Image 1 (cartoon, rainbow, N blue to C red):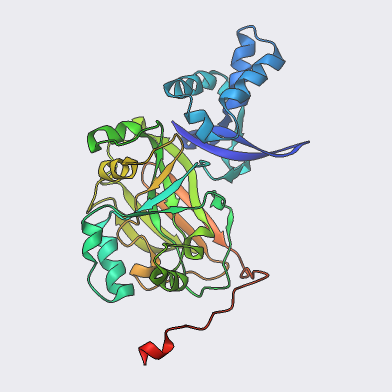
Image 2 (cartoon, rainbow, N blue to C red):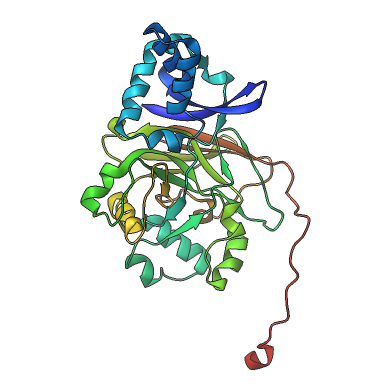
Length: 338
């Protein structure tokens, strides 16, 4: 099943709905509306059917997934009323496919690792990236869905896209082994780890991880494909297009650490929650930094991944200017450097 979230206008303002996506039929099905109709056909009152349906299919897909295996069973039941609860794909407004409690983004593809260090650090990859599957944590407050606009912060001249797989957790887990990890993955989506490469270079030496260079936007979508529809993650093909021009063709291959190892490693001394998003790291040639080409205000970026679809976003036409920015302080060790 393919699952996403859309925005609908109501008298109380914008509300988010969980939808089943049928690209082959060019439609989405509002699962709360559909399940309420199914319950009414089974004798429930309209009011009680709506209350129960919205409790199972709330605005939060993470909360819905937390129901466990019953969630997908009920979602399939709801499709009995699909024809009466559907909307054409062209008529919907997408939001981030998941509202993750936590975003963690890994670094697992050998090709991207080698290209990044060669083009940015001008050196060979550091030994540490081969000793453990590193990752960072990102904010959940700036997730962006399909066809939403990406801000361009004024602190950068090198805005970059990154084509990644987003592994969506379906079950809680802690201290997992790789053999156990795949059973905890609910589905996969496209994850665009938008990056400000010049800001990233300035933040790195601080030693605290990514800050504004990452947390201004995380693209998630257009929807999630559940694992029962994916024969194998390895070998999936991807493509990057900017303004219709193909920038890169790529493939899920050359793992330094497999998805199972990444997810298991993250769970050590920690806890996975339903809805958590774990980014795979950038696929080989999935980032502009690897080919020396970045994006400009107004550009339209499309990331396509086999088995999922295409996540499309336009960059804002003008750069975002914050009302305040800190002044650099005097460096107290200047004399020691001279």
